Image (cartoon, rainbow, N blue to C red; front, side, top):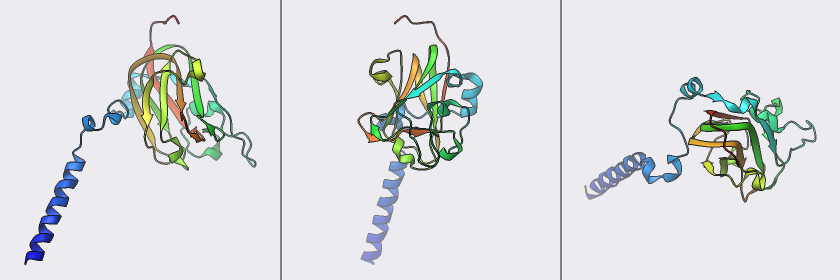
Length: 200
């Protein structure tokens, strides 16, 4: 009887702990407050234009596959095609290097509200720890601009939207700062609106 009572008590305590864990708010997890957006992507697309489609992308290097050649060009990240298979030619892919980065020049000043990224369907964990930056500076290849979001985890082939809180800038960077890794994504969408020109 005592054993049965002990089992019931342990089971009840573990259920309460699980419920508490599920009810943790974003306030207790500050990394998620300004990161992931709880907004329907279709409503974002109705309200804002995808500014990335008309940008000029570049990146720290381009990976050459011995069989397929240069599939992972920078422009693949803003081609409007979210296909997550690298070998279909719609993802960008750097070499393995220290602090690999990708950048798009939006050509003008914009107020950026949301940035949506789509991960490759394999080796997706490589993007973990990437910073999404927005600003006007090309110092350090644009990798010193203010941070919109940190990609803490993005599963293979997944798409996630991050809220930037109306950051204003011309350049959007994605960088794995301080990591020796490859950087690859299959689509980057930048949703915002024209903002007054800022003199820099």
